[in-house]
Length: 239
Image (cartoon, rainbow, N blue to C red; front, side):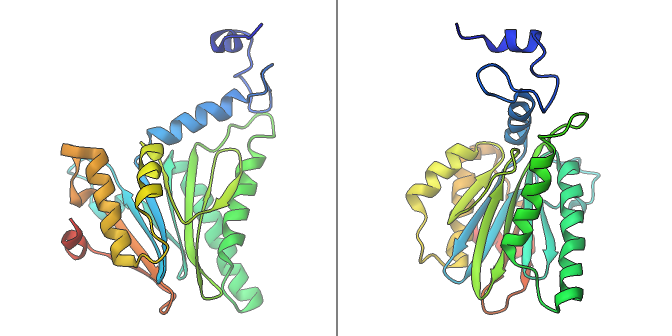
């Protein structure tokens, strides 16, 4: 007989990230996945000339300095990240991998690989599903950058899995956004086209809640190999 979710909780299967329920679920991980979907969305697109992230910062208190609420983070000059879920959890992972990126430069005199960045983050996330006394990181992370002259785009999830994508979304309405991306993404898309598509998707999803001022836009061009953050006035032309 199948055990209802409520009975799972009564029996205590959701009290530890290391305890499997009888039907093979780790309930603390599933709760964390729900937390990610409560976070504001980010879209990453791997374009023919580089890679970009467009992130919704959400509605903030008007007293907050807007720049202090950015949702896209520099890991190194050729790698960036965005997150959905508990941003405080993301900060711990971002700060850790920033140190690793700088140590790699000092040790090997070369920039860290983008896949090394996502793998290290995913490894930490996985460890927090395996040890008692801790909870899973309540965050999904997009990592984008340039590696060996090629643009790369990855996402890690709560369980510590990661995959490379042509285009991806995390956060609120991520499945709806990915469904649109599957229909409209093209491999020959340029960065400007990718930014325009991202705003079109956010407009479609958010409807009357759409506000161009609540977004971050950052891209890395293959030729320059350095991330560039657009100011609000720069990307209003894509509105």
